[in-house]
Length: 287
Image (tube, rainbow, N blue to C red; front, side, top):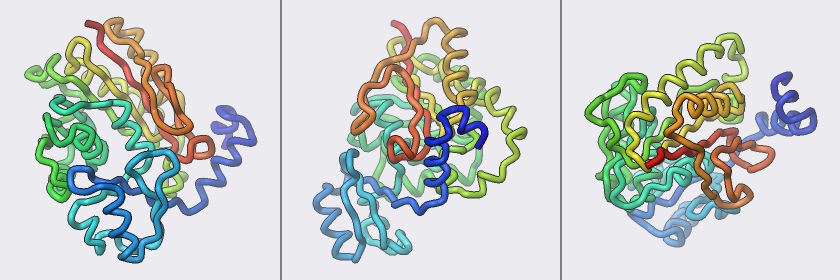
């Protein structure tokens, strides 16, 4: 509460905390590799799902009354997937195109890789990495369900460089481990974390970002994101990175809805944008 009040003032902090204690509509994304939004909408309604189009994110719906999602044929057959708007926005900020080579350094459980594969029309190559073997299997199963064939999973530590990938990627995404303070409304146990235990996170985040930058080709894109709202895990990490890497710079990008043009990086807030608390930063490597 003290940190939030210092960041956004008492009124917004109260709104943020109130939203942390309210149910959140599930957001699903249409899988354009398998269906169209109108077809999915009709199918879900016939299955008794209550849904409305997301107010500003194309191809997404807010749904209630789903029960167990896995019972729905639309989900089981991969015609849709669950993803908060903020996570989809990270993929839109990365802006991969058909044929891109993308590295997702901390990919599990795979949502951003899936969203980027959809942006790429299933064409190109996404290398989705994680440190835990069982999470690779989950990502493989998700990609198979969604009909994504351009995605390869690999066991890798985001802090350790694979020289074979140096300056090879068009886009590298770092959705780094973080305090998670932007998603308390979905993972309420986060509120019981000891703030002192979070002190080591910026060093880990910086190490992953520093290593990931080595994979970006000249003129390529580097995206850094977290699901927290703390500056020490967000803009302080990216500001420090740019001071140490003059060959990179913040890159202006545009996002839909109430967000619009972003001058390099933005913190999303549930009380402002209706998304999870999230930080998205886009940088480019100079030619």
